[in-house]
Length: 476
Ligand code: ADP
Ligand code: MG
View 1 (cartoon, rainbow, N blue to C red):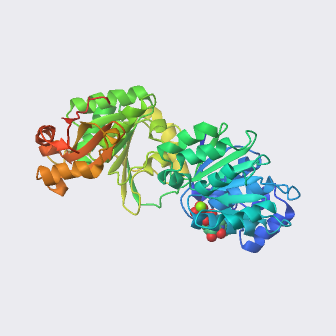
View 2 (cartoon, rainbow, N blue to C red):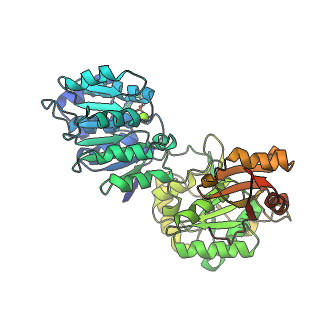
View 3 (tube, rainbow, N blue to C red):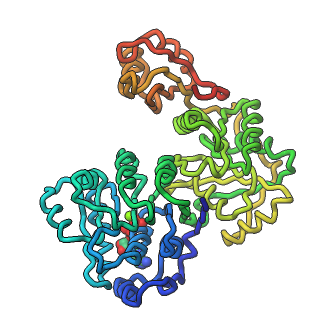
């Protein structure tokens, strides 16, 4: 898989006429006022028009619909009255919007039939429309499954499958339906997946039925000042220790620390843990269960520092990171933009702290070039602990043996802690119930006491085994 990360700033001057589109389509785009491609269109359309499978991520409003619509229209043979494209959307409203946009873009071609197939509408009308022959079907997974089961929808002529707003479809629990629909499509086809975020499930989904997909991410360049970036020159031997100096100086509540290698991740976590920080590593090759546990603990605020490689951090969507630390400079300047874009989301200001040794200055130069600004250098020596207190996370995680299989729900756990044991709602944080286990964040100062008292009461009428997770615990 390739990752092409394209800053949206590069979108100016991307005329549609650079693409192999018909003169009628180009004229229609002009009429619609689509003069330049948006960044995601400029990145997706050339490979999409070559028939490549694509996973595209860009924020809402970036023009993703036309990025797939122009590709699927180019694939279409209007003289063949059979379903050649299927677009899956999470909701009826979104399906309607997509249908409207496809129709607008298809106006140049003669008589392309687009139909929306969603629930909440009588089947009869849809069946009649399908019988008349359509080229493009846009719909929600549930209703499409209905039609496939009734065999009112034939997919043997299909050449393009689109998953729009894939992240939302996953949120809504459509994973299995999507896989089922995809299985009914001909193997020889193009699959285009669009998403505003890149959660874990997307790679699982794409692994099931996409062919060597190209991953395209359009990172919105943060405007100057929204992320404060500071650079520190270090000797290689100082690097890991410098991370703890940064943590004690800036005291961010949650930090994502990027290393270029797995070995560096391991070393950094060992150093940080030895110094009393709560730090966990995330790198490829962790078992899924271990990975989930690490993410739960970081997201529920019982771990201060998550140390990760770029690959492992892909798709991580964690709100409100206090800081990103680039422990190693990445040789790819676009990856740098990606990394620091994790802090300062949603209007908050962000902090990106970067360590660089002399032999990384070439990579620093490339980053400066891409960002169009010079680095702001600070001496390591100016770092002073902001407080004599160690940096500790506010919460700790309790591990309860038992989960959905035991019919435990978050409310049962919260009830046992508040109603039965008398803790306040504020002392309890996130509750994650998995199939066989449950994680509960509680105020760190009372965690041991809560664990012991909870093991002596009942959750959902049953005694449960509870313990507090430590940093060097692995998942079990
Ligand atoms: P997304 O799916 O990424 O949220 P949409 O595809 O809904 O975004 O597009 C957002 C808006 O931008 C729509 O109103 C669409 O008509 C418009 N738009 C898309 N591409 C272009 C373009 N190249 N030039 C001008 N407007 C565009
Ligand atoms: Mg969209």
